Image (cartoon, rainbow, N blue to C red; front, side, top):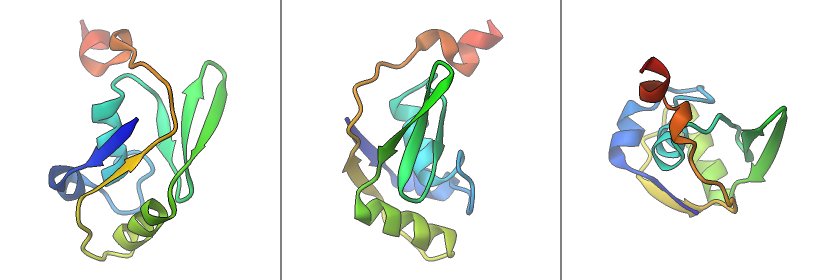
Length: 97
């Protein structure tokens, strides 16, 4: 699955956040309703009671490190080796209804 981190995701990102960093914002757009945490070398996605680690490409790790250090970063795209469908019943809008 291609993950696209846009300029809007970068602007909205919070330094040091495993949920609200630019990668987290891009994941939320790509996989609504999926519970995740972003680490520096992997994305962890909840699968029932388990968390599954999906390794990140080296340049995404560098992007995260630079962003967290306060360096200006440019939008990026990367392939995440994941075969997962979003759960439309687990989005904030669906849960509020």
